[in-house]
Amino acid sequence: MTVQITPFVLGDYQTNCHVLTQGDECWVVDCGYSPEPLIEYLETEKLQPKAILLTHCHADHIAGLDKLRDSIGNVPVYCHPIEHSWNMDPTLNLSGFAGTPITVSPPDKTLQDGDVLSLGDSTWRVVHTPGHSPGSVCFINDDANEAIVGDTLFAGSIGRHDFPTSNVEDLRHTIANVLMNLPDEMNIYPGHGPASTIGHERVTNPFVVQGF
Image (cartoon, rainbow, N blue to C red; front, side):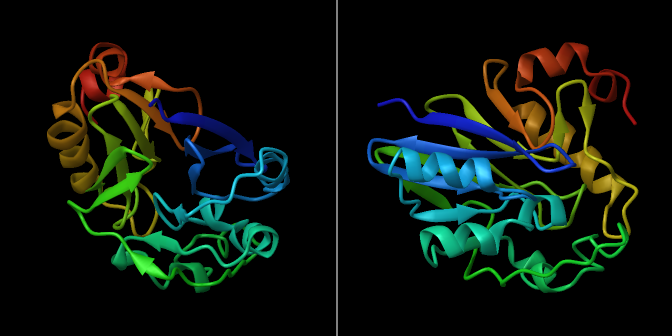
């Protein structure tokens, strides 16, 4: 059975937050500022997420968590352990630098590199992809060639690596040795901008072709 991936572009940062659905099971991946369209979709479709997965804990990917959980209940939130404290720290989640510090409830559970998650009869592996942030992760369904890649790789670009907790060498390694080892037909769903494929980015993305 195919997993339906429904994106919502939320808030002033135009953050892509995704609802993944298979049968009567669903996840939410990231929940940014102004999450009302995502919440309305869940209510209209009568979907109850079994988990909220975070690609990383920057403010534009977490700001709507409490509002979402006020609507749907205390669904468990997962993130990489390196960023477990970031939801409560405006300096680490970068909202303090934007002049509007935010805090939201802490994650309930952690995700480790190599974890395998099940949604319906689909399986998704958790891949640690540091660089843009130290605890960035991607969620990859190898059987369906679908990957939620957060702010690590974009269509025609890459995640920023000039934040205090970013690491350009880690990002180079992640893109060259992790994401570019995925098959060309792998569809990628970034945290900002349009979807793409690994094959397209391999030959057209200047940061992949020319380096950075």
